[in-house]
Length: 528
Image (tube, rainbow, N blue to C red; front, side, top):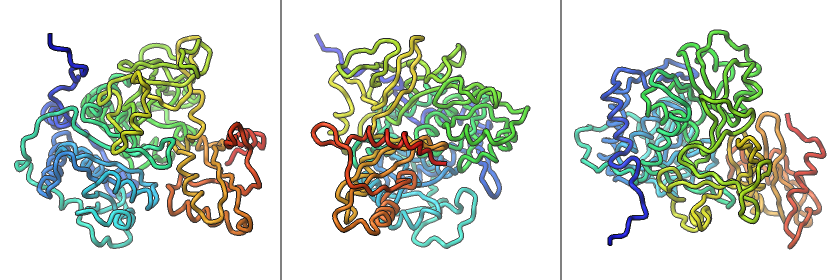
């Protein structure tokens, strides 16, 4: 008797990102898909047919330049239409888009380019010099005409214009629609010194599109205002892919702006938006129009305390780059527990376990583990790092998230804490070890420990406690700050550098970071 394969039928068998793009161009050719709202200059809009045509030309251009399926293309850009075209164009051609955080320092970007084995780059004038210095070995580089609508102040040398990539769609070779093929790479902070390269398959992207659309109850007539960075999972999956799945419209802004949020929302009749707590707090300073069209906002908690102020119900959720979409989510149609993340989302096995690996009882806090299918509802792997991939999963296949949650008596899940060596800075995950790695390399540093300090707007910020080597204290803080500036993205840099004579110790002489955190709390050190 032939044994049954351990891999079930992919829910997107015979499909890839081309499938949904071509289907939308055929079924809603004239419906607006992408509306660009720059901070300066004229906006633009693409119908589904026009957008897919632009994507096809980009894909054909990649093929003409010799980029083969599976090869990686670095996309280092803030939000702009060219980002979406390049991202989808890579997928259409079978290439893999490596979308990187534009706050990255040169050393970080150099690592991303080398580690991903990128063959080319797409960027914008503001980052052209950085890309050229960080990745001089790339075969070719293209640059957009503007920085999110703003004309550059300096000429960009050594780059081709973005339009130069366009090719003849008729020259694209036939290729099977394979949902297991790689779709994209995002670098995410972990508990090691270097970020890990999270690989999504086309099946992952389609899963994110379908699941997000269902969880958010998106409809074809929705208008999704998108301003969170496109190099992150939130904007990619929760906003753009979800809208694409149902044939809705995406209004894209270069970044979040509290003063522009309501005018842009009213102009386009926005009905949905995904945000982070920082955005909601910033909007509390703005007058709320009576005639807005929002029916729902997405954020980290259900029924947030600001809902009454804005007159909009908040759908809570929890997710990671590795989970593609919401592993935990509230209900659009049923009552949710205020300040909860929601309940386990369809397609995921959610476990909250104690230190012994046993399920916690209602009311208790435990570690959050997620079950799913690799390459569909969970990421495929960490590129080039089989050891990190293996370490991320238990023997039973559960993914270890590093987050701690409380199982409520009501069955809802409530976020409690995260791995103590991970910080959440304005919605960005930051590994304390990554900052420590940079500081420890500074001449004159004997030992360093980085912990989180509460912040009124950013949730947390890094604080570095440093023991200087004897005779090296003078000027050490300045040297550390300079080193961090060159090696770390802005949000990863310590807000305070404290030189100390010693660090508290726990068993086996490990630094007792809990005592450092407690000391910061005792000082009531909440930065403005």
